[in-house]
Image (cartoon, rainbow, N blue to C red; front, side):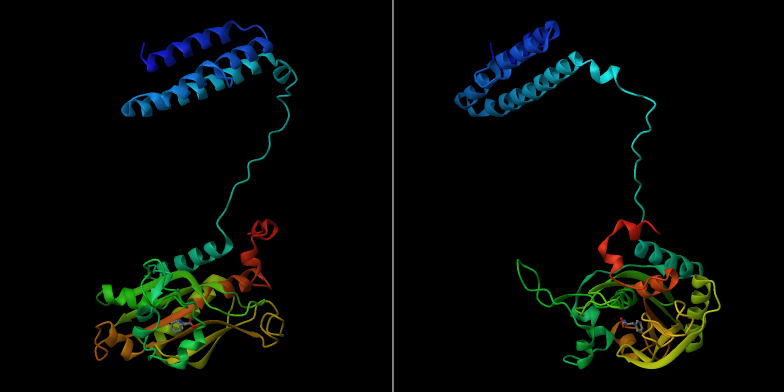
Length: 341
Ligand code: PHE
């Protein structure tokens, strides 16, 4: 008789004996006889190593399967003797509630922002979080060794395990500008939410990981007026209030002119609180008109085309909207916090 059919008949025999077992003790005996250390099945398993190579695998697999099956049958039989479990069960007791997950507040905030912009004709795009110098800096008009690179507190990846040299964690979502420009012919109008990384001291206002939503439009005759209009419309729609924006002249290598935009602090109604550093205003985004050097780097003609770009801090926006006073709450995953949204 082949080993496989031995296993089969062993299963049949053990099954029949289990069927007729009349007590837990008898089941235990069957178990020892077939599965015990000196039982029949382990006996067969021991012999596997003496079989011709090509038979070892199927026989081993069949023996293992038989062991699992018998184990299950033994357990089921033992449970059938344990009648108390059924008789005492109170079917009228309420069940344990199922907890249902939900998107994290930051994910929802990004989706809400993208949704508002997509209704204004923006396409939603994504880009990689691990990026090369060119997309995070070079093509965005950061000259090599320029101090503006320090502004961004970059995490660089160590070269190892075949990882190419010079990779970094993107410090902003502006890399998506370059990638989209390179792969599209204008007009382009895109919104790109995502995660960014900066080696910053953690505080109630700053974290080493945070999120931005990048937006940009390139075409003929795109002006600063378009930029201001789209940002104000967004803020009034998202916060559903009479938001005020303040454009402060600023500098980014990839925009000219550049501005930082503050919105009136909703937390303290402009009186000053710890969130706005007693200023009444909260910085929510950087923006500007796309620098001609960026256009040239991606093969767009700056004589013909113009465009704007902005990058907003998602945490800041969610904090304002929901009156959250500490950015670290987003990352602690305390369910008492998460469940409020
Ligand atoms: N990338 C800039 C930052 O992270 C924000 C920005 C985006 C500014 C687009 C101008 C245009 O600070």
